[in-house]
Image (cartoon, rainbow, N blue to C red):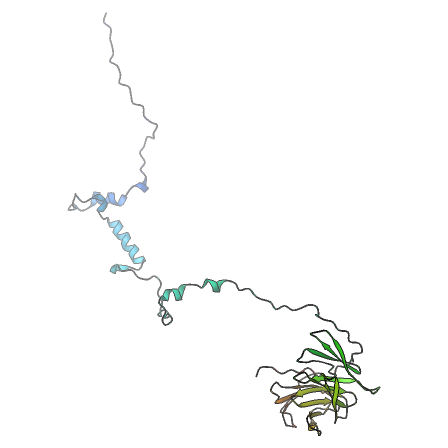
Length: 315
């Protein structure tokens, strides 16, 4: 009996699990290069590397890209944005025009700190002023150039030294119906003019605490005073203004009348001493030239008495 022996089988190699189809990736393929290799020119040098061969698709893409970038057929770069006019020239002597045109100053870009002026909300000093006349048309306060404040309280003038805080009594009227109606310091602060309800203008030496002289000429109370060197101007309820030269006996040098119809309650000389401003209860403001008896300007637009007057200090 013959036994049949079969030949041993070759073991099969184990395959990794894969799909049954090959699916190429288009992102890894160069279809244009493959098409060119299949249908390209037969005269192409076979020794030329494949990577160096040009395809019609790439040439067309490069041409389109060049046109869109403004290079065109000349293969020269063109500016995408151009100016119709020439750029401004840099300052004379400057070396780097681009820095002048396009750089920014970082210091100027920083926000500047705005400094606010301090305005006190409370008074620095409070002075008692008993018997201060409640009359709008009187001028009962005046500050000297030597930092002394003159205050008229009824019949008495007091001097308050702002530097030392001391208070002195200067003068007191004598009549029962008489009281102080105006005070005004001379420019150097050594003398003070005092107007009274008794139609008088008094001049006092503050250093010697004595009265120098008394001047008359008004027919009503003297409610405003203004100095111009040796000339003392006084305004009265009689609607007139008188210029007094305090150096001479006949002190009245000029009388200004007719421009005001009511009490003159404000007087102020300009800084150069060439013009005098006067305001009255008739709502009129007049500007007088030195030595003239007719006002140069007259302003009638106010709706109330003109008392507060001030000249600009700048010439």
